[in-house]
Amino acid sequence: MMIKRLFAICSLTMLIISLAACGGLRFSQVSPEAADFHPRKIAVFPVEMAGNDKEAKSAVEKIVARALADQKWFSGITDTDSLNRRLLDNEELHKIMNDYLSKLRTVNFSDPDLSRKIGDIMDADAFLLVSVDIWQYTLEKEDKVAKVGLGMQLYEAATGKLMWKAGHQITKSYILIKPELPDVARDVVEKMVDYLPH
Image (cartoon, rainbow, N blue to C red; front, side, top):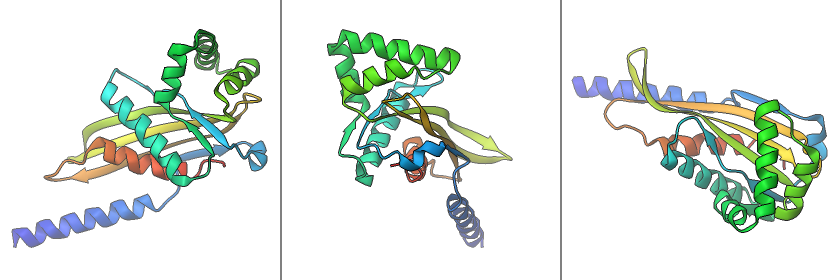
């Protein structure tokens, strides 16, 4: 009897999660100019996250690069590892990137001159910025859950214009087997990338 009850609870939980995953993103905003924006080459900037969880950061960077490659929308993808190598080798690029990201973070200004220079050096039409907003195991109404929330922003390199921004999170309940947070992140990323202008 207990096994049947546990099976029914697990089945119901999986059904609710499946239905919840069928909806759209938690938040998505597209610029009017995005209808005519079709980047061929994209660079993925280093993931930003609260705290210093290097494993989580690295996992999300790899998941994003893989999801973009799987879509086959772009002729060139500069993943974060490649970008970091370029930053180490190119002092000019390193300085321009620091200046660009500093302005973006402090005054929310995507400097068009710096953006264009980064695009020229990186040979990229667009930049994708990703932030990890939630990465945790927690309790919600006495249910154990694994929760991952991400934010994404897509900028046009030539103009510095924000073409798209979105946020989404997925929460997976569990009883005995704890879902791996990178697996939850993969579901979030794949869902978000489906909405990426291309």
